[in-house]
Each structure stands twice: as C-alpha cells, then as structure tokens.
Length: 253
Image 1 (cartoon, one colour):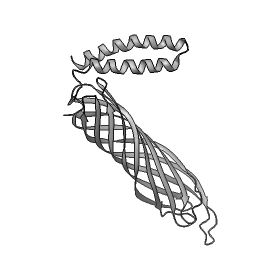
Image 2: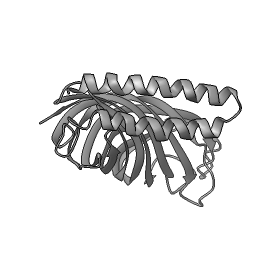
Image 3: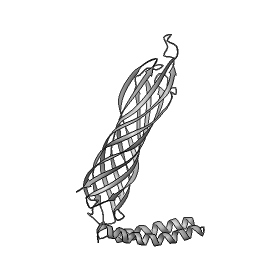
Image 4: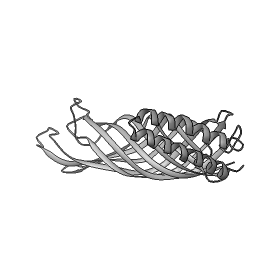
C-alpha cells in the first residue's frame, strides 16, 4: 500500500467519523465529540499507513531544506544609566534560510529529531524617543530602530507520524544578530549578537518518500544586550523577543 492509498483509505474513515462528530456537536455534546474524533481518527489513519510509515520509514534519516516566511519582534528597552523605561519597539518583516537535521522514527510512529536552522532576516520596527543627555544639551528628539538581521537555532523535535503527516513540537537554543539605530537630533548605531531559547511546533507533509512540505511556528526569547547609542547615559538595554511563521521544503535520504 503506498502513502496515497493509505491516506485516502484513512480519509474515508475519518469522513464517516466526522459525521458522527457533527451529530454529537449539534446534540450538545461538544467535548465528547472532540474526544470521539481525536481518539477514533488518529488510530485509523495510522493503522492504514502502517505498511509504509513504520520504523525506518520515510521520516528516518538525514534531511536538508529551505524555508521562508514572516516574523515579528518586540524590543523591551530600558536606559542603561538608571534602568528607567525607554520606549518599546514592535516590528515585523521576513525571514529566509535553510535547515539540516536527522530524524529517528520508531515502530510506535514516534519521530525524534535534531535540527539546525540559519535564516537571514529583515524584521524591523521603530519608535519616537526623547531624552535629555545632560551637559546643557536639552531635550533631544530621535527615532529608535531595532532590526533583527539573522536568526538561528539548534533544537530537538518530537513528532508523531500519521500516514504522510507528521505534527511536531520543537525547542532548543537560539542565536540572533540585531542592530539598534538612533536618528534625529542625535545619531548612533550598534550591532550585537543575542543568545537565548526557542520553542514552537509545526507539521510536515510527505509528498514522496524523499520530499516533504513543512509549516512551522517558532517563538524566540533572545535575552538582553546593551547598545551604546545616544541616550541619557549608559546606552540602551534591549530585551529582544520574536516570532516567526515559515513554510518550506525538505529533501530526505
């Protein structure tokens, strides 16, 4: 049985079960309907695909691929001199890059993997700021801009193969490169490397035994760095977080 036959057979069973689910919903048993669908459909799909997607199946082995999508950032800022609050920054943009990893697939359809990703990014936001740097200069009006230029991570993945579909959770260590620019009455800029953690999840869909599509959500907490840029003194401390939603293509062998 190939994966398409397995998937279609499992889908026929799922469609019948979904009818039961909807009748349960309309009769007021929403919670029981959800449980019925989850408990009944997942084993049906997995059983139909067992001949193809068992131990050492198509998720087992080395893979590499490309990814791209959108991202959002939040920079929570304080002034370095006294730790007082500085205007925060929210921004958005794009990410694009690649990944390489290895999966181990087991007879119970569990998939455990390790993956490294590296992306170029252009996730940018800005905010108006004003401060008195002292020395008789008076209030300075500027624009602060935070930009994530690169994102990378090394993470563990835990998934469950349901026919040609593998949903997964992932988490690990993260690294990012970001810049902070001040323009206006005063100017300055600096770049820093951040380190922190990432967590998220997604799913892959096997097109063939070697090619798969993926969709992924990742949250990054990149920690705090001090940028020595114009301000009331001591630079600006930036705590940087980000989220990305990406799609991609993997080649496995």
